[in-house]
Amino acid sequence: MANLQENEAWVDGIYQLETTDPVMGGPDGIDNVQAKQLGSRTKFLKKRQDNLIERVDGLEETTDQSLIAAIGQEIVRGMEHGALAFKEIEKTRRFRNQTGQVRFVNRGARRGCTVTKSTTATRNLTFDEGELFANGRVYFLPQRINGAAVPSNNTAAPATCVAFARVTATGIELDVSNLGSDAPADAIPLYRISVPAGNNSGSDQYLAAVTLTDVRRIEPDFPLMLASPTTALVLWPFPFPVGDLGWQLAIDMVSSSGDAAAHHVLVSERASNGARLTLAHYADDVIVKYSLTNNGV
Image 1 (cartoon, rainbow, N blue to C red):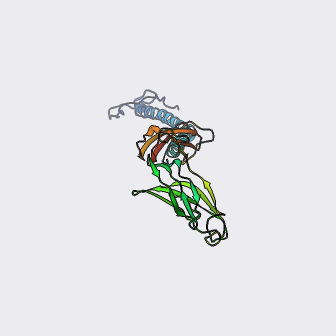
Image 2 (image 1 turned 30 degrees about the vertical axis):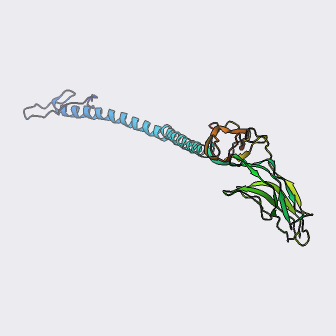
Image 3 (image 1 turned 180 degrees about the vertical axis):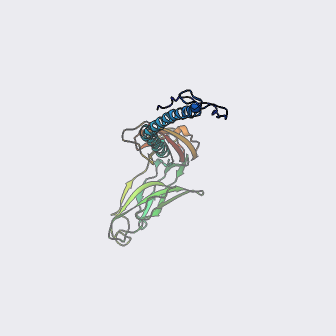
């Protein structure tokens, strides 16, 4: 007794035994034709099944190790790129493009306008004649005897105030600020006044104990030349690292009392956290917008 020899081949069709077929065994006997055909098909399918199993096993191994590792690396890389993108966006929003606004006040005295204590009126000041400059032009100030009064200080602590001039639509106003206050924003400061504690009209009628300190800005050659041009110290909203001076500044003129232009605003000092800007012009109340860029951050 022996097994039939199977071939690894797909046999088309299965032989149908006929009633007239003789009974014949053996490897090539008619009785074994169907079995050989089916066996060959089975061997053919078994071979392909084994190949498929081998490929699936290899795919599972790849999926479990290399493919999953590769996918994981791509996910990590994507997260890193996303974090970098957000970081760069934040740098651009905060550091690389910054904007702000600066105001220059360009006022003072060309000559005169000194302030002295009155000897004829209680706690009054006399303003000598002179020339003031504001709004990009010069104004003549005639002498004002007893032009403004110094407030009393009835507190237990010394205090200061400011004597100032202010150009109005009807002329030049002279006055003294309240104790503890500076001159108004649209005024020209002339003298800072120190008033001792308890100093009033009863104790010091003619301001003998009061100190006047000259704070005038004198520009004798205005408007042709300015000895001390007005400046503005600008601090960046988001400072750069210490030592980083690689920024660029663009100026846009908003308004001015005079014919100032953007190129009249110069960067006179540079720092990583700000800059000092100088107005090289006679205009007053100059407002500019700046655009700060630094692509090296």
